[in-house]
Amino acid sequence: MGLPAIPAQEAIAALRDYGERLIERRERVAARKSEAGPNLPLFLEGIFDYGLALAGAEIRWVETFLKQLEKEAESAVR
Image (cartoon, rainbow, N blue to C red; front, side, top):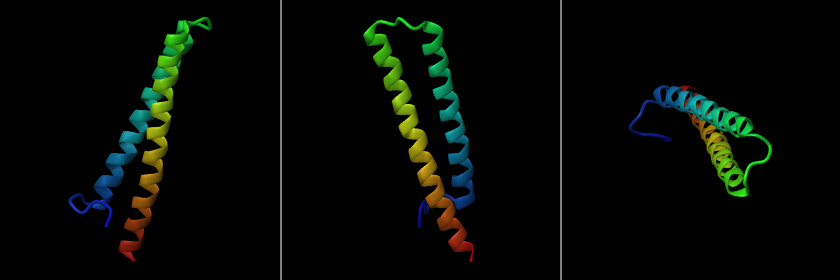
Protein backbone atom coordinates (compact mmCIF):
# COMPACT_ATOMS: atom_id res chain seq x y z
CA MET A 1 0.00 0.00 0.00
CA GLY A 2 1.35 3.41 -1.01
CA LEU A 3 0.45 5.65 1.91
CA PRO A 4 -1.19 3.62 4.68
CA ALA A 5 -2.10 6.57 6.93
CA ILE A 6 -3.78 8.67 4.22
CA PRO A 7 -6.76 7.67 2.06
CA ALA A 8 -5.60 7.21 -1.55
CA GLN A 9 -7.93 9.82 -3.06
CA GLU A 10 -6.87 12.39 -0.47
CA ALA A 11 -3.19 11.74 -1.19
CA ILE A 12 -3.79 11.91 -4.94
CA ALA A 13 -5.61 15.23 -4.63
CA ALA A 14 -2.86 16.66 -2.43
CA LEU A 15 -0.12 15.53 -4.81
CA ARG A 16 -1.95 17.01 -7.81
CA ASP A 17 -2.26 20.31 -5.96
CA TYR A 18 1.39 20.22 -4.93
CA GLY A 19 2.46 19.44 -8.50
CA GLU A 20 0.51 22.45 -9.77
CA ARG A 21 2.18 24.70 -7.19
CA LEU A 22 5.60 23.36 -8.22
CA ILE A 23 4.88 24.18 -11.86
CA GLU A 24 3.81 27.70 -10.87
CA ARG A 25 7.00 28.13 -8.84
CA ARG A 26 9.15 26.95 -11.75
CA GLU A 27 7.34 29.42 -14.03
CA ARG A 28 7.99 32.27 -11.59
CA VAL A 29 11.71 31.44 -11.43
CA ALA A 30 11.89 31.24 -15.24
CA ALA A 31 10.12 34.60 -15.50
CA ARG A 32 12.51 36.22 -13.01
CA LYS A 33 15.47 34.85 -14.93
CA SER A 34 14.05 36.23 -18.16
CA GLU A 35 13.37 39.62 -16.56
CA ALA A 36 16.96 39.75 -15.31
CA GLY A 37 18.14 39.87 -18.92
CA PRO A 38 20.49 37.89 -21.13
CA ASN A 39 23.82 39.02 -19.66
CA LEU A 40 23.62 37.67 -16.13
CA PRO A 41 26.81 37.09 -14.18
CA LEU A 42 27.68 33.40 -14.17
CA PHE A 43 26.85 32.94 -10.48
CA LEU A 44 23.33 34.37 -10.97
CA GLU A 45 22.79 32.24 -14.05
CA GLY A 46 23.84 29.25 -11.96
CA ILE A 47 21.43 30.13 -9.15
CA PHE A 48 18.50 30.43 -11.56
CA ASP A 49 19.47 27.23 -13.39
CA TYR A 50 19.82 25.36 -10.11
CA GLY A 51 16.34 26.46 -9.01
CA LEU A 52 14.86 25.47 -12.37
CA ALA A 53 16.60 22.09 -12.34
CA LEU A 54 15.46 21.38 -8.78
CA ALA A 55 11.87 22.34 -9.56
CA GLY A 56 11.93 20.21 -12.73
CA ALA A 57 13.25 17.19 -10.84
CA GLU A 58 10.63 17.55 -8.12
CA ILE A 59 7.84 17.93 -10.69
CA ARG A 60 8.97 14.75 -12.47
CA TRP A 61 9.10 12.89 -9.14
CA VAL A 62 5.59 14.02 -8.19
CA GLU A 63 4.25 13.03 -11.61
CA THR A 64 5.86 9.59 -11.41
CA PHE A 65 4.75 8.93 -7.84
CA LEU A 66 1.26 10.20 -8.61
CA LYS A 67 0.92 7.76 -11.53
CA GLN A 68 2.05 4.91 -9.29
CA LEU A 69 -0.38 5.91 -6.55
CA GLU A 70 -3.26 6.27 -9.01
CA LYS A 71 -2.49 2.85 -10.49
CA GLU A 72 -2.41 1.30 -7.02
CA ALA A 73 -5.67 3.00 -6.02
CA GLU A 74 -7.32 1.81 -9.22
CA SER A 75 -6.18 -1.75 -8.56
CA ALA A 76 -7.54 -1.60 -5.01
CA VAL A 77 -10.99 -0.64 -6.28
CA ARG A 78 -11.20 -3.70 -8.52
